[in-house]
Image (cartoon, rainbow, N blue to C red; front, side):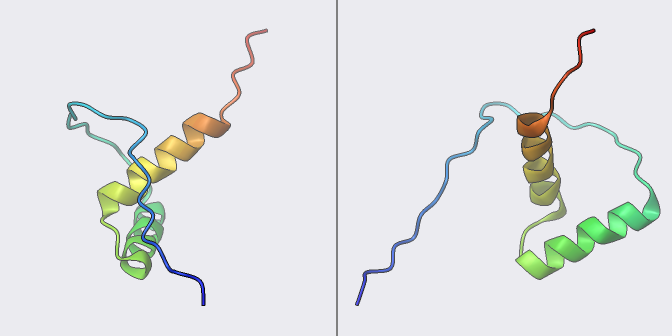
Length: 63
């Protein structure tokens, strides 16, 4: 039987955090809240993870 391990990934962005204001469509916020409820994460964690993913996948067209 293989040994199970708890693997914790470090945060990609560290340091001081700041508060921002963000306007989202109500249905998008509902989807974020559903994802948070289903995963046991906070709304903030879902948003930060989503932003990290978006930044990694982003391609800027500089033409």
